[in-house]
Image (cartoon, rainbow over all chains, first blue to last red; front, side, top):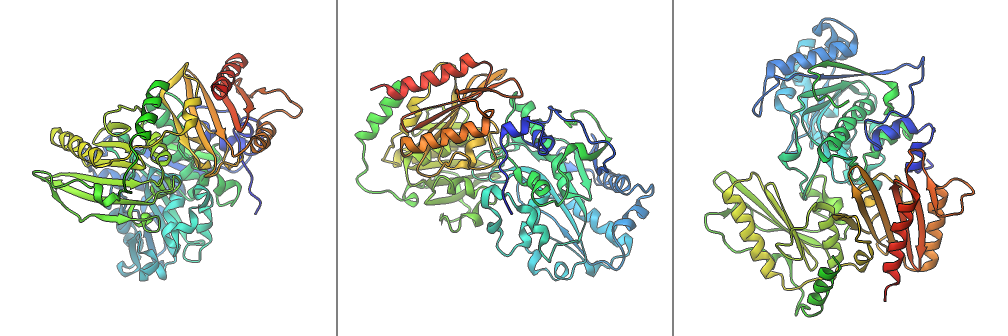
Length: 298
Length: 294
């Protein structure tokens, strides 16, 4: 596959790349190009609740309501139990791909809610597993028919951000083989037999995202903030694209000037333009905003 | 800035190490009230991925040789001590410029204290001390450890010569990053997704911020192996950023900002986001003056 170089000049000109690139690389406030009328949009739900956190504790009831509302919004079905049945079926074997990075892991409360919802659909407890680094050896994941991809977004020293796309890297027996060119081709992970065609739901956890990294382990609580949100969608590229815009916007707000991620999270754009896995173009995303609006940044 | 660089260079000339120090020898001794939670562990480029989830490539892109790591605890306080051997002083300096926002010059050849963290570089070593919190005890201990490691490191290193070529006027204090891996080309400002300017371990690069936040310009300075390589990459720069047929050194972009390129000997000098042609021209002229200074 021939690689296309993207330069700042190209992003400023009216090319096919411009709408995606200008949004993901040049900052979130710029809107250089109008959406294309009549084109089918990819729906992404952004839901927030100002009462979600009490100190560092997550209010499980509110989180449960948020995820149900997001699933209803995605499916267009009013009742949450019916909406979940649209996503999962009783015969499914479900792997919930979580992320256990110790500084900012997927909240266990959220994992438990997803298990509860899967059981409520009729999936047997024996056919549900939550895993991260052990997915390749996990018997449930090995026979899975459905996956839910769930993780927090954070800055990342090599791929720009830890994204939903990057969360599947543990499905590779050799994760470092996806590190070339700052993880440009992470979308290829979706071609792996363990993954291909199985993902039913993508949830980007934006409760306390990390917008800047310092030091070898990247984490400093000073660079997280209480965004108290979730982003959900069927298209991981679109969900990551929305999350990335929020991270970029926060960086601009915090540093007082355009402060691009270093390196840029180009894997999200290339998942669209090179690998055609989904859409990163904000003009092709129907972003449905629910709940708390203050400081939404997108 | 130049005066302090000259002093550091002179220091380096008179302080060549008698023998090559190992990272493990530089780890601090016992600290009152603190006990090691882990033994000292050495990681190499082959094992660094196991140790730093997500951050290994930064150090590998600056040619890291090995890192020693230890975690110490005192009640609920925890400090992680890491000493990186970056093979050459220029790499230790480069990694430092990658992270620091303000060089406080307290430890080693450059240092900065963050919330619950302290970093410094000295010679070919880059040291990071990271705590799980920030309080008086942690702050005091971070400084005590930094002081001890600083004292143990007997070598100092030369700053890359390219640093001295940056024009000083309107340069943001400590507002530059030194690198020789193309991934860091976009550190302050998105320029290109790929290695369009053939940056490699053999090229020295600096990206610097000029002006203030409201009116920011960026200077990119690359030193190639020879003038032919520089000329070829200047041509690429023009092809990528300039209108076809524009053979002078300046181009206005679609956002109203100016981009400019020039060369001198083995150097490529690029300017991005200048508010006008005159300022772009000024930055280039100043850089050329510095290059040609005896």
